[in-house]
Length: 347
Figure 1 (tube, helix red, strand yellow):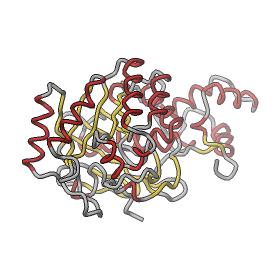
Figure 2 (cartoon, helix red, strand yellow):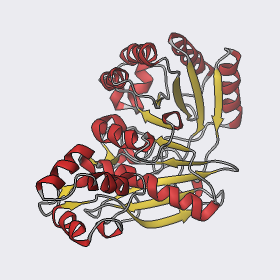
Figure 3 (cartoon, rainbow, N blue to C red):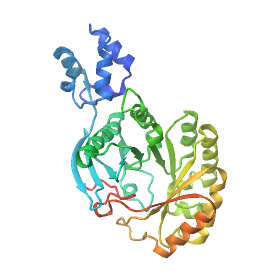
Figure 4 (cartoon, rainbow, N blue to C red):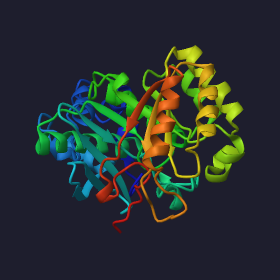
């Protein structure tokens, strides 16, 4: 709420309809407004060209549309684009457009900063300022859709909630925004094109299962050894690998979905054959897909990219266990847009 105005993106179609009727407006106008908010999303009521000026004034006097503004763009030599989004309160979050020959992926943020403190992640060093609203999450995607078309003549094919923040700690706003992304009333993207990435919060993963989500779940694992994982991912001290495994078994049973594991290979930290053996053992409880990711340097020099030999040995071992393994090479490293590098550096 800003200046006693309500964020209209928090209201349902029926709630908008009731407000209009109470103000002497026709109920059918609600559907027109809802379409402007979600299907052809505008950032201001003046853009709702098929409703009267008086109704637009009524909306403007009582409501806001909490969207985002593109504050800055950086283009990588590999065509990845990092976007700094400015929010209503002046805070910044970052998103990334990752293009390839025939697809475009939007990596978006769910929080301003993050309070989970993963040692290898630049965002984790920022602390948490606040959660993003439904509109701020949704409009990152809207802006990246425009950018993909304008810059590369590509349609957006995939969305990953892998930017700044832990999506499961902004649960309601994340689920509402993804519901509208996949709704026919919104962007009508298949939920199978959406992936939510989490550090692994067992209670919230079970809640996702109970809510019968249709999008994909990815877990940033990075080690299958409790002691080791706790050293660089403090969240593991309160949510053990055993608890996490139980929640993933539950999620798989409820949704019948394969779990994706993300694993950053870091020199001398988690890239030995023993690490690979522990990881392969951990994967036995449910069907998995594994993304092995190149580490991208941050200001913390304790963490380095795994050497090619160690990297290849690790990948070869995992594949030898008949696991589905993909290698994710870094994109946008030269503009700090790669995995783990987002930190809202533009102030």
